[in-house]
Image (cartoon, rainbow, N blue to C red; front, side, top):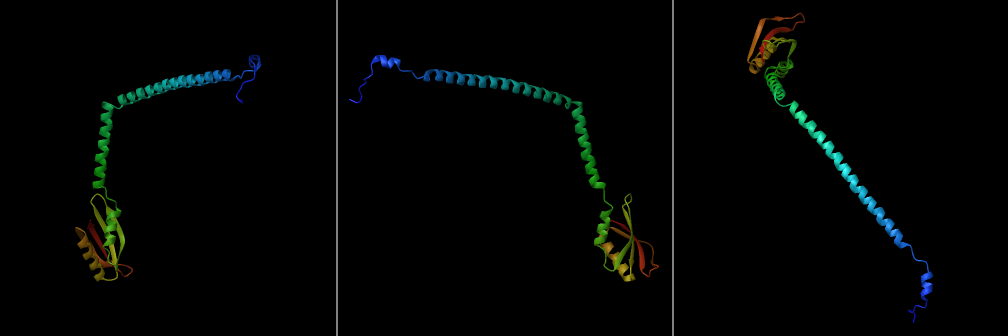
Length: 173
């Protein structure tokens, strides 16, 4: 009998009704408002992105027009010129230190270079060799002749003021 309702109908009518129905309508309307706001916000954002994309595309087309035709040929011609100049510089340009490095590798320990001149136009190196003996100068000349295409003794081999044997050599590296 615990499940028998002893309340009469009039008492049930006087009891206050819960207000859950009005809060669910408010919740539904606010959720609907948020969804519409997000939808129209995304539409606005999409339109803004489309305008930005169209502007960038128009700018890209304008840039392509500016670098096409005669101007593109000028840029290509300039690049070709730079390539040819670079290739020529690699072939013809020789550092004045390059022959000196080769000479330094072929030096005999008993001889010294007292003077060095490099003529880039003729490709000649003029060196003055100083040593304590004629034998050391001769060994140095032989070492240079083995390493370089042409080695010539310029003038006479002589004894310098300091007592060293001095020879002037013309070398073509």
